[in-house]
Length: 279
Image 1 (cartoon, one colour):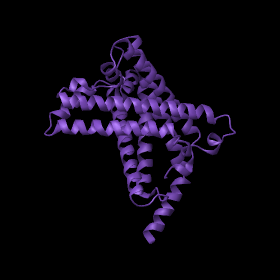
Image 2: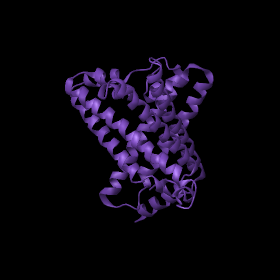
Image 3: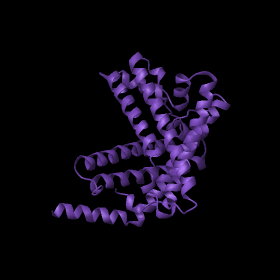
Image 4: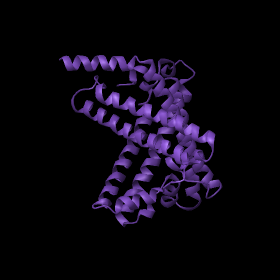
């Protein structure tokens, strides 16, 4: 009983913390900027070949060439670290409105999100320090994993998980599951802000989900054929699956969608519902 009461108090304190709220806002803006960078580079790869890699690391590496860009990377690394702390707090004391297995799953999901942001924080900090000189391709990473014992099965499993997550994100966005994350001004049906934010959220989640599904399928395909070269970032994945001129159109469509997702994250940061921080 005492432990439960302490957990509830910790959750309440987290939701009412101005420091945590502003840290989350900053992290979400940084995450939104990352998606906007990926969207721009993906579009550039269609319009101007050999201009970079449409992956998270490839997009961030574009900022590491100059001093201002490296400073921005450091700021983004701090923001991603703040998102990690947020998810760890949510995993430790959050989701009291859920019960049983659902609460456990929600907390595990928070740990998974925290792991993604921890990777981005470490990657961003490393690029800021090294200037992007050690960029690696998704295919190289896949090849390394496939060389491990049972590595082929691990790549296939990751591909299946990424595909399921992608489908889940698309459904989440279409069903407006993101609305509780926004404050009353953004949720109000009478407000002018709801419609553009809903459009950005739906389109953005659909594009994000589509990108993950494509990349997940490519990972399974790479594992099935024992060929890591079949894996890759957003640009390579869409070209491999669709091919030709339609592939270029698909990259542009998904790039626009990812741009919408980035703008939605900025809107979410502005209209952050603090009650949703741990639930």
